[in-house]
Amino acid sequence: MFKLWSEKNSNAMELLSPNLELRNWNNLSRDEKDKIWHYLKYWFAEDDKEKNFRVFLAIHKLNDLHKYQSYAQRFLKDFSSRTALLDFEDIFFNHDENVVLELLSCFCKAILWEKGDKPSGIYKADYKSEEEYKKALTSWKFNEFDKFAEKINDVFEHFGVNLFLSRSGFVARQDSKITNEIYVPVLNFLSSPDWDDVNRELRDAFKEYQLKTEHGYSNCITHAVSALQAYLQVLTNGKIGGADGINSLVKKAQEKELVPKDKFSSEIFRNIDSILMKERGKTGDAHPKQEYANEESARLVLNLIMIFLQHCIQK
Image (cartoon, rainbow, N blue to C red; front, side, top):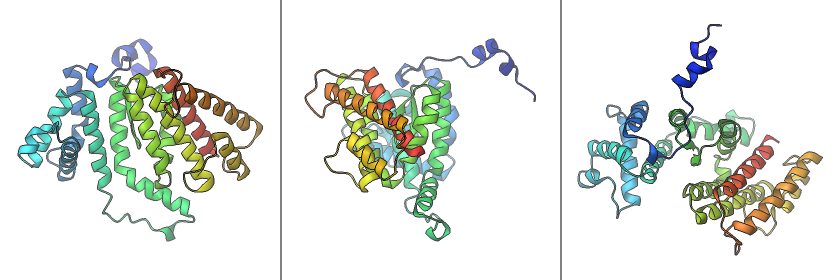
């Protein structure tokens, strides 16, 4: 098979596609943002009514959510698709990372809203089980969103942006193996409406983590552990609620053969429960904490929980 020069020469690959350190959006240069914009501008195309309407909805939502700041000033004074696109581009280049990510999140919402009032063409009668039907319906709902996420994640990775877009929102980028083999499949699985309560807690955990503050990291741990409890509650009881701890819920799930119950898995579950409860009691906000969490401890808890969920889902 013919190979590119860069596939045969590591020095060439390092020159052609340097491995950049992860960095915030705010640390990108104007030239870098301009390149990213042109790689993504197909999705914000002015001559495509559908894509232009997404921009319109995103800008409208951004202003509506943050009326005091009213980031889209042109749109506020001239309610049109033209001003929406102008403000969208201006925010992309000139505003703080938090505003840009909020705008892109609103744009993602606009993509998903499109499916809200459209017939899916997917019928229960065509599937052998309720689970298969729901999986097909979820896949249809996120089809266009997944295409956008794949594109923006590829571009962000090339420019070292420290975030990736998942079905639960923007999440801190980590090693590509962890991201692709653990985070993406788990978050895709949890995108079904059955897991809305779990997703809510995970979204809050990711949001708090991205604040990059001691209080945010502590909140992140609290929400992450709550997400795991919610998952086990829904898995074992069909809904959230109850006083059972993680260890008790795991035992119930194992009794119902909903999660692996071999000796190795049981030992892992027991150790993870011990670590999570110790960390939440020490640095989380569910109880008076001994100290604030830091980035490393919050990331450890997030990764442990995502690995735990992946192990359960694989069952």
